[in-house]
Amino acid sequence: MSVSKVPWVIKYRPRKLSEFVNQDEAVEKIKAWIKEWLSGRPEKKAALFYGPPGSGKTSIVEALCREYGFQLVEMNASDYRREQDIERVARLASVQRGLFASRRIILLDEIDGLALAGGADAGAIEAIVELIETTKNPVIMTANNPWDLAFRPLRDLSVMIEFKRLSKSNVLEVLRRICVAEKLACDEKALDFIAEKSEGDLRSAINDLEAVAEGGGKVTEEIAKQLLRARDRILEPFEVVRKIFWSKYVWQAKLNATQTDLDPDTLMEWINENLPRQISDPEDLWRAYEALAKADVYRGRIVRSGSWDLLTYVTELMTAGVALAPKNDPKSKFRWVKYQFPEKIRLMSQTKEARALRDSIAGIIGARIHASKAKVLKDVLPYIKVIFENNVEEAAKIAISLNLTDPMIKYLSQDKADKIIARVKELRKAIRAEARKSESGREDVQKAGRKSEESGRAQQAKSGLDSFVKKTRS
Image (cartoon, rainbow, N blue to C red; front, side):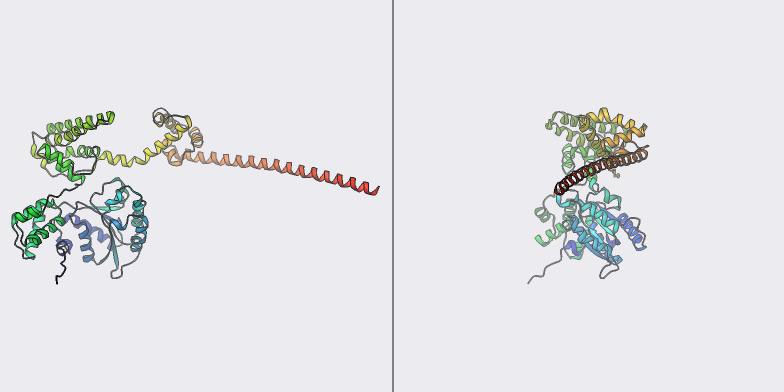
């Protein structure tokens, strides 16, 4: 009778923070954050662990709980697809002490799925925000890509802790250690092949090692190549940009561009933002930007004409054209530099609310004057803003006429918004008072009319009664 084995990925999972490979910076930040919690004065109540798959984000949470005596309350992606799921489990755990520990850690694992559109996720991010604001226990979230615009409220409330992709040597170090522990004969070339294929994903490398060991009884390069197929990966934006810059051949740069779920426009913004960080020589940088500019020209032609067959030129120019631009200092493209999130996308996110207000105002005005939104934005709204910046009285009247909200007024006038809002309230109060006065006057007239009518009927009835009495007496 066979006994079920513990998978190696669990058996050899690090049990202490010090056992994690190549994550020293992340470990120090985690320790500092936990110490703030233990002192009772955390600057931020949540932490967001982000990095590529297999870098140890979830495992380090378990080690953290074991080392500091926390009880772990874990929810994975399928547990918090809806707002009520978070309210039922995590919020309860956030305000109560653990059964066997004085404190708990709430782990929301793999939150990437919440960025996908769909009714199942409605309210989930808002519920997590409320959870973080009210929690009495540390909240840890993990994500492969935390830079989606939907995660901005979570990033603002969290300590951002990055987990680096492990190098090939890091993965080899762990694989060798497992071979020794399992008393397994391992060919160094086979381990090198497994580590290379994993692309820094330690979890997949350990699973592959175990599969080869079980399949052949020993680990050789021949068996490894027979059992393990190439793994297609979806790379994070930082990784795909680095792979494009480091490409040596046209086909390699184009292939690397397919390993991301970014659309071509967004990928172009990532390349544009980080190009001067990677290439240092001015002439090489000029050649790279020349290729990127031509890609942008073709992209514009696609938008205007709908000729999507031009997309292949866009892709080739912004990937291979950029990657092969360095001639004077070709080694500079292989330097490791820290890439940045595109500033244009960040600014678009920050101004999203303002643009929504602008479009709402244009829609209201357009409906009133029977003009298109584009026409209002170009020919009407600038003059409305001039009025709001210079004439409080007229601005208040316009605001009342169009029934503008306070945020709309603040968009139209930054300097005098408070005065306009106050004047709008005064005018609306006066209008309501006048309306009540008019209504009261109408009621008085109606009452007087009803009283006169009742008096007439009474007089008529009285005269009829007097006449009847006189007739009976006579």
